[in-house]
Image (tube, rainbow, N blue to C red; front, top):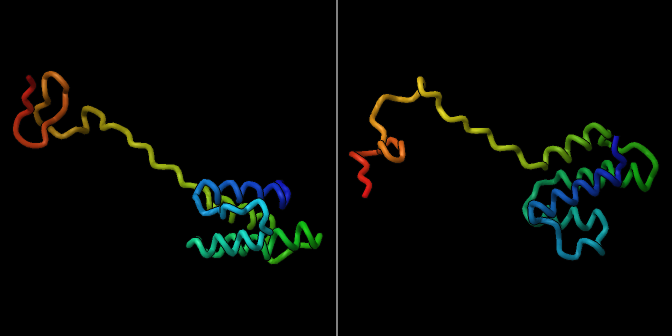
Length: 115
């Protein structure tokens, strides 16, 4: 299991990727970063992570209201979701109709003319 600081580092990377990490983040506390992120329009998950997991676990040496499993889930919830893969239709699934003899594209309307 990752440590609280490792999870915080991963969370900061995700926030940076989303473009909501404050520019002065290197000199801010985690609570200040969480507040800035919330003000940037993200919901309260980062504040919840900081106040109920990171601070109690790392600085207080005690469990907070958020368990390690919940903290990992919280970080995972901020990860971008993969786009569904688009599979081309199998030839037998394609609707009937003529295709262009040159580029093999099915015309939307009318006939495709090349040349």
